[in-house]
Image (tube, rainbow, N blue to C red; front, side, top):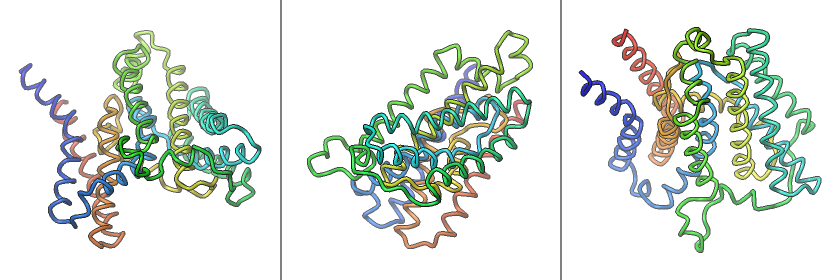
Length: 321
């Protein structure tokens, strides 16, 4: 029995990675030859970085048993804050921190409303989705903010010939480094154990002395801070602060976590799975685009994969019950 349990555990962990390999091999076979080129793989990594970065924070929230629909709006606000600070001659690193701090404040507000007022996370973050988006538009005076060129613009830019040794841009490496940090947090710290405990059974966690409200505030703060970091990558891609960018991106972020094995019921999820989910969606879009398939086909395929992932999760839970 223990052997079977361990085997299933490893299968669940490796399933998202196997999914990435399956989708890649599928398009490598039926798609054009350019799909497997090094340049295309670098492009896929760059395109996955924004959703992947935000998915790191969303993973924490979903394991906790919550949801954050304001991630896309926070990304937009972050780009606006960064561009506005750069216009005021603030150093690039400080401007980037300003974008992350703006996201952190939004997340702490979400956590406070959810815990102190005992409101449903779906409703709270649906409301703050609009509030934060409105704040971004107001700060930008409902227009894009141009900013001077800095090293921030190179985070997700295609590698120059003399940078090929890096394999992928520095922004992608930043996602990888922070993914390791979140993995360590989840599996080797008290906070990580408390996040899994609350997501698995909040009442039991309370009875065991877990400070549930404090953990929730921290997690929602971290989630929005990672959305702020995704805003840095989004700014690098656009080179402007745009209050209308990333509309609906929160759905891609949530989908990445769910495809990667995160359970909307809480208590389950992994960093590797969430990143794999982000890559799977990018592979599907890139493959369909290079094959000349219309956008609606990409949406149908991605939606079907999301439904299948949730269905598998439900069936797995019903068998365990």
